[in-house]
Image (cartoon, rainbow, N blue to C red; front, side, top):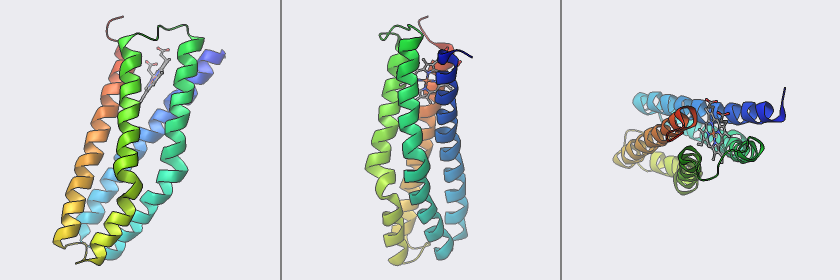
Length: 153
Ligand code: HEM
């Protein structure tokens, strides 16, 4: 196996973790919120904090590192649209993580503590959280399309 193939395998596995993990967390969050069960929502928020630092953060860094190295190793053109879309999608995902997911667990627990999982504050946090999660998945799907289709090539 060539170094290039190895880098792309690592890159794609990291993308699978990020996207698959995101879809799974969104589905589980939907189920937890629908149950209106305080304990279930709080427990999932703690799991979200755990996978955020143990899985999502390393996966995003690994994805970028292996991707950049693969572009260099494969002698791709840094100006290609698919590479720019990759950078833009990665940055959007990381900004969403820093601005939202990073503090989401605490926000959920505070909201559940203030009126329960069925309370108005928790419902607001749930609605925004689900919308942010779905938007992030949509961004990642666009990037996967760009990586595979390589528009302009
Ligand atoms: C959220 C961001 C990204 C996701 C989800 C993603 C996902 C993927 C996927 C699924 C592939 C496999 C496509 C195929 O082989 O047909 C791929 C390939 C690749 N990606 Fe990314 N990628 C992202 C960002 C980046 C970035 C920022 C770079 C580099 C700066 C990059 C560089 C590459 C390279 C070089 C390949 C191999 C292309 C080939 O051999 O045809 N990716 N990416």
